Length: 326
View 1 (cartoon, rainbow, N blue to C red):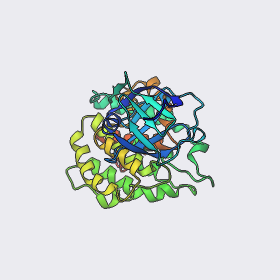
View 2: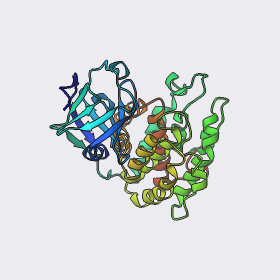
View 3: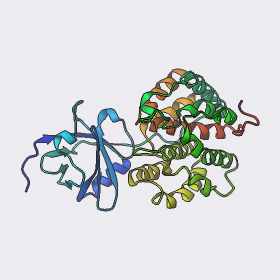
View 4: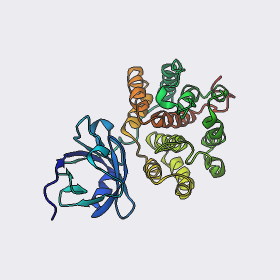
């Protein structure tokens, strides 16, 4: 038996997928290490993201009482380290323990009640709140200043103004690559009984840099919005077309997040954002935009863009510039 771990941090909550991953762990490995968080992988391939309480809830998240200045690499955490379940605790390597007693399982809210009128009003508020943010933050640019996400699209997609969204800039090669998939998804959401345009949507899977590429986050935002707003039938059709193709087109961590989105589960901040939109509460929308936009380098904005496009489709307005926008 190993001795008492040098560092112990109590776990406080976990998402549904995280709980399943921990329960089947037995022996696993550290899959990825970042400064404030890390991923572990069970032998089945199930992934769990272990992070601080401030990371916020999500289906893959196991949230723990980590100190605000925790730095996992400096504490010796390394990829491929052994992870074991020992009774009511996780043991990572020889020095880190995470007691699990008293953990609370988090699940996203059930279907969000809404009217088309309130959702339309919420989208208009969203467009107004984000419209003035024309300067892309430094964190959403790469090392040579290129835009790395879809933040700029959010106001236009909220309004259904595709002509406005398409205006190119010299610094948006990502958008140029994403545009065929975005427009194909918008057209399909207007008539989802048709076959899913998988060839066009392939262009979004794995598109962009980072742990969860922008294209994946955009599709995840769309899937969660469909489920949260009562169109699980449409979400299921979209997921059935996309998920068999995910493993070949993106990384394992992003694929795990997409699988959760296909089940209607996303970051807690995304669900809060959809509730705020549905109730057309301006102060809640503003707060949820700030919270969701703070996730990752551009992940929150990319999810927001996918959700905004989907919500606009659900209020029945044209997404092609023929009736709902500029």
